[in-house]
Length: 340
Image (cartoon, rainbow, N blue to C red; front, top):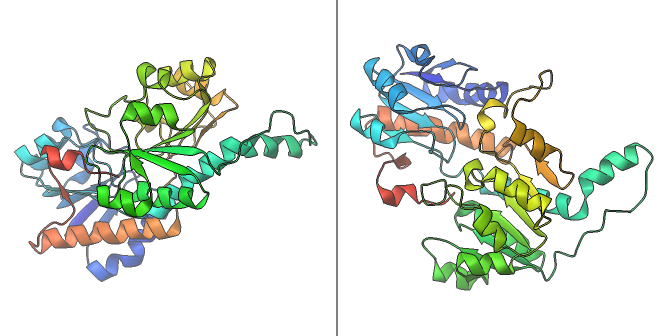
């Protein structure tokens, strides 16, 4: 079985090469991101394997079907870059990696919280320049503060466990509350408005759907506690970036830690340091000293990358052997709201 991987980096190749002999697949790697213009690179493949910045829209899927591709394998949890209706129409199953390492993303979210709260990033640059002043570096005790967690899937639950260890109170919101989990974890499910009003830190861990797209906009920000720290390690389009910028300028948002950005495809995972940034919105975000943008690296640990490769290969093997696809995603609403 031949598999074409799009959007690959050296670390992807290393992980897949370590296990390819176990599965016996013929793998072809491409650095370019899948889209309607380069879909011909998949010619002769039985499956394509894509990541978050690849585009499997209706036109691309139609071309994939025309050249005999039988499976789309995502090596990530999110699937908003795939037209699931088109995939179903052309009879191409879509599989994903639902849980590569919830610890990795949760720990990255905590790193953003701590860095922003205690101004570690600013202190780092100051001391390198011989400035050991404490002016502007005051933070707050996490102990006793309230964290608002939107979505309570695997990653969020790991984050909640860590934050409870800090002695924080946790309130959460989820389309499908789990009362048993809430009782065991010592958290409370509350309406979004209450979460925004109470939380000193808001962290987003819900999938991107029509319901959640731009859920953090002017209205949501206006209901948040003044000085709130906003963390997004989920999907870029959960936040309306211009509304976030307004919230930062008005001092309503105290700080923002973003591992994702709604227009990240042109920048993330690439070295663009020799170019003038032509994304004015991203440039404005980067100008704030209380904003940290990381390059969608929350997943990026050795353990997670290896888990991604193994789960992806197992998904493809299950398909090739006509077994039930445990990690298949479909266009039905119940799949669209699964948590990250």
